[in-house]
Length: 354
Image (tube, rainbow, N blue to C red):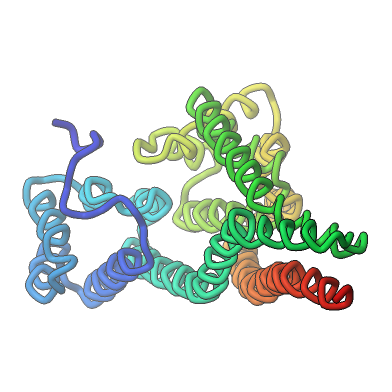
């Protein structure tokens, strides 16, 4: 079977923070060994010996495929390394700085692992609280509120408007949550189904149109600008860069992007103008390319811009994670107050009538 076909391996496709960390450490060590003069086969033989139990199987699989004559990129693909990582190393085969590219890819996976770990730590406790509150809301609806209604009815007393509204809100909250959850799941499934009918490039453009997130633009601008800059610094022309993108087998997104750019350039547009339809790239990137085309230092300027995008992306992700937890806690606090109010206010009203 072909190397690009889906295989069942001992490695999971699910990119947990632990899996990303192991793969990042592996690539980081591999890149450093290549920089020190080790051959790829020598480096893989050493790493397969010292690898931890969790990663030994797929490290040995990569080593076996390299010994059989496959490239490192093909070996990483078969072990379900992230698509962006594999594509980075594919580009590195052309710009010549392969050891540094392997090290950088490993460092990026380690950084992604740390971000996932921090996000998990930020959300774990609030999510547990929300689950507990949901259970409490269902208990309130099925047990406590019906008893409160019986007591108030037997006491021939009417609850104040504010109290009735709070009790009604708590009573209807489980239904609201179920309907909202069902709509969210249905909407997600419909989007996934619609996405399967479109190409990866069309999906990314649609995603950026529906959720105009600057973070997405920063991520993809950093990704493309760095790889384009490295290829140009390695002696490739813009036409050769497009040709390399078209030859990419691991990422349909990169391949389709290359085909779209080639189509635009064949109609007489410049490289920078051919990017106008890509809403997942920042306008600044397009301006940098226009300036670089005129100055003759496009490769260096793209790499510098990519570094700036990466720094800004990391800063904004940190700010987002710092913002998420207080918001979630605020929602939890409101729900807890509502539950207490639904319990205590009717009780106080009944006591006032005694």
